[in-house]
Amino acid sequence: MTRETVRAVAEDLAAQGVVGVTVVWVDNNGISRSRTVPVSRLESVAERGIGITPLFAVFDSLDGITFGHDGLGTPSGDIRLVPECDRLVRLSGQPGFAWVPGRQVAADGSPWPYDQRGVLERQVERGERLGLSFLAGYEMEFQLLRPEPGSEQLRPTHEGPSYGPLRMLAVDEFAEQLLRDLGGNGIEVNQFHGEYGPGQYELSIVAADPVTAADHQVLARQTIHAAARAHGLRASFAPLVELGQVGNGWHLHTSVSRAGQNVLSGGSGPGELGPEGAAYLAGLLRDLRAVVAVTAPSLSSLHRRRPGYWSGAYDFWGVENREAALRLVPGSTLVGAGNANIELKPSDASANPHLAIAAVLAAGLGGIEDGLTPPEPVAQDPGTWTEHQRSERGIAALPSTMAEQLDALMSNKRIRTALGEELADAFRAVREADVAWAAERTDAEVLAAHRWLY
Image 1 (cartoon, rainbow, N blue to C red):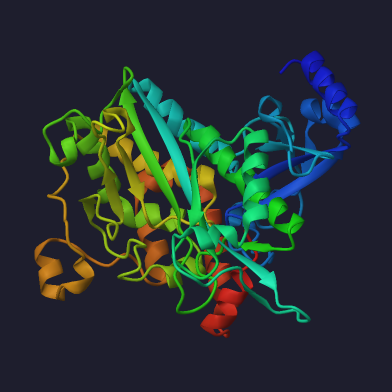
Image 2 (image 1 turned 90 degrees about the vertical axis):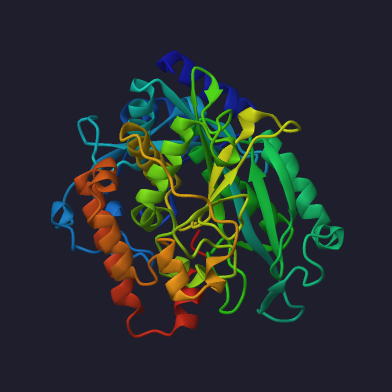
């Protein structure tokens, strides 16, 4: 936007009763951070940004600051947070405020290597140079809890049948406001329904270009929190809220097209995969262990990822196989070939969405560039097989410890390069700080500490 356009937008917002503009970015833990400025300051902030510490790149999940990354080894320095004003939204559920995603830049305005938004933009541009475009969309699972009468304890809003109308009726007023607010905030919804676990719900967002999809995920999260608060509820997006429960995945769907044609369909491969679509999937499978270190990076993520829970515990793909880490969703006569996509199951709210989509695109593009071919799809649940049967098919469990996960990431040059060496090492340091914090705590204590972070 030009300075004059920003000034006009600010004046229009003020006339509508908006008093503040919240500039939001997501850190390496999947946690939204923000600065709010008076609407009268929007013009100045759009030009000069807001000063913030570069150490947000090495904040861990519990707000500790690690100096385990040499590039950010002191408390000195400053960067600027610049709002992307063309994506500014007046918040339907918080009418006194507007929301806008922010870009982190160096003090002189030049690109900053730890800016997650820029990481995703580089992968989109990489695809464009190859003549490819992408769509991405999220299915967001979360649990809704309400206070026990006369107690500070919280209980699930409904514990009755999964996927049923009674589960929606239990949060009727919340659901009505949420759908209105999401529409008002410019987020198109595919569906909203009661899910499997106690008080669990799922919201599916219409696919968009990758940067918009990441922004919409962050804005949808804000919208859900606001609607929940308005109705005396609390929303938890944690990968696992309680031990023994079903976890919350934020399943990431992507598709890739050339000249307007979805390359995941129209071919002769399994699920009608085309050659480039098959190579994209094969690239995802090749780098899956490193990708998952970015898309499901937290200690809570590791607790969620278990065989038999549709959370993608093993490194294999299947056509419409909900136990598969990579699920091909084919197009069809009814929905159209252009709707074919690949769903990544090991993906959750502890991931920065810009980094998560960037890692997926980097892996898929690598597969296309290298002309990879995927193995045959699996229709069964390998979790019910013997270790020997899995080994015969080349299937192994995805990392179950942070050490395994970080080794997969840091030893993978393709994904590490996509993130950038500086950001990748800061990401490693943050994960190791989380492990050090958790060393003397129980699993239940770790999950409780992650319950309200996202």
